[in-house]
Length: 266
Length: 298
Image 1 (cartoon, each protein chain N blue to C red):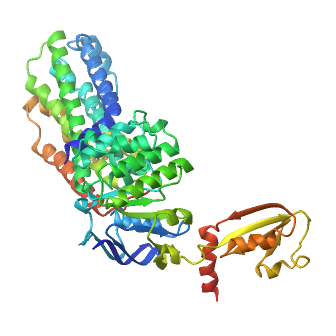
Image 2 (image 1 turned 180 degrees about the horizontal axis):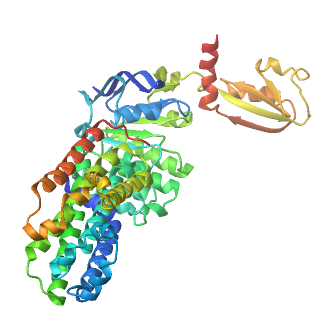
Image 3 (image 1 turned 120 degrees about the vertical axis):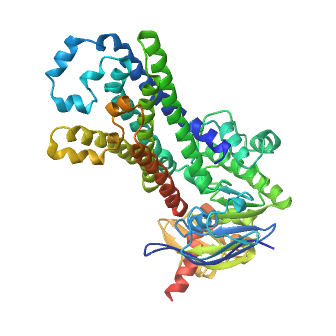
């Protein structure tokens, strides 16, 4: 990992990082602004009771949770945070080398006196800094707005919810770091990155429709952390942490191995 | 000492041959030309030297060390200009130069880039996406020169440069060579090799067909003379032109002669006939290579 490479990569990806950050922060701010309308609103709960249970479950709604700020954040906001951060994380990881190949800048970059390992790891570090900064900023914004607009009794629960979403997004990045070595087209890599994160979410949604297709959730990384469980136990599941970080690390290692032997297209 | 040595360098893409059994030896301080038509395998060879692709078989030695896999320590001593300069469009020329200088552990201010930029009349403040093809090439040249490499590898460096800039660039290369820089220069334009190189390797269909001093390139002194006489039609027999050049040909109102030596004698002979127009040109590399095709055919 080299500082010059990280700075260079950050400069090249600053715009998409800003867009991603603004989109996620905007959504989180909107959700927080709904707090007054949601918490303890019996009319709303009555309306929601008439909705299909599968739909409510897929977006993390549990009626008994909607009495506190943390509970509200654990429902739809947590789902959206995980989904949006995962999509951006997967896309940024998927295009990290594909764009060098697609825009034919790879020949210049890989002829510099940097090893392929340095180049790859610098890109990984830049990606990690960008995703982590959005995770920290999102948590900070929600925490501040939460204190301003409502009452936060269990900050640790809120922190763990965001951390769970962050770990899921890292797992998708791990998949992206493998794809980016295998795919030379930036658009194809971007589409696959988005596709994997969204299809995975869709599988989780579908799995709630009936008991018979419950197994579909096994193919979704969004299943790794259960919002209700986080609120009840104030911990993240060990298996969720191991699987998400395991996929992230394995993805980086596999990507690195493949990249070391890859020929650079021009 | 050999700065660059390749032994039996071979690259196959599946069953398709890229290059085969390339043997090159470039000595310190030499300007070595690598000439061949487009698609002959020049860029493939160079990209293996730069470790962008790995050989199917054969060996590469740079600065006396065997290149086995990714060797950034050896690339540090090389300046490389690719045939098509593709750089980060959102950055300015200066940002590209600063990034590259830092990659070599240098501060841009301490390099000779500003002088080179003046010679090449290059404005480094603009964004890469706004540069013309020629300006992108100039930026590519600055990027490969800024760290004063021991070995300069140039793949078709003059494409996109206007004749004045080509001249300025060649002058700069001569200056750098005099200071001790070794230059490996790939081109398909014979005249460029003649201006600059000490020795050349000629590559065709992925194989080296000859390595020679520039003076020894077969047919390099040949000139094709196209003459249009005032009198129209095929005049080969009527004027007895075969006595001047037995290979003379006629096509579309023009008589084509091939002259290898003593062009003044040819001009003296031909000027006794009324001439409407005449052009003299050096045959292209492809035309010279016909010599090898013909040899192979036999």
